[in-house]
Image (cartoon, rainbow, N blue to C red):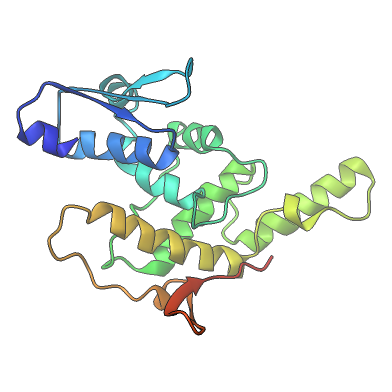
Length: 217
């Protein structure tokens, strides 16, 4: 998209079926103050065509935090939350819930996680909870009280404070990568400092390093 702008074209059509691509297009369209025609369309026939400029105008009041909200609410390398979709997150942002922009390595991680906790808890209907474990326990108690059941599936509950903290570290490093996409020398970050573990793999054919993480409820 940026190359098209620099080449002085007037429009671009991006063929993709990924939420990440859509959010990145929207983010940079607003941040770079673009005005050209940009659409994103799915390779699957008869799916909707989204106009980035119109979407940016509609959500201009939250456009600069959508990338952070997308990272917080889950994507390929950050776990999502049972029953909480992107629509719920946008609804919370529209009601005035704020979130500190992720990807700023100078920001205090604890403060970043604190605001992310408030947003995630609000999505579960508990806007005043300051720890995810409190949100988890309260929601469990409410559900058990209503249903009369003695046990809720752990997968249907919010994560614990510890699991959420690890998730937010992974969200933070990914947001940093996204936001420094145009830098010739982006921050040199060690994934092991952001919720990942290094696992050296070797056999007779190759030697490599892979990064993995485990999320515990």
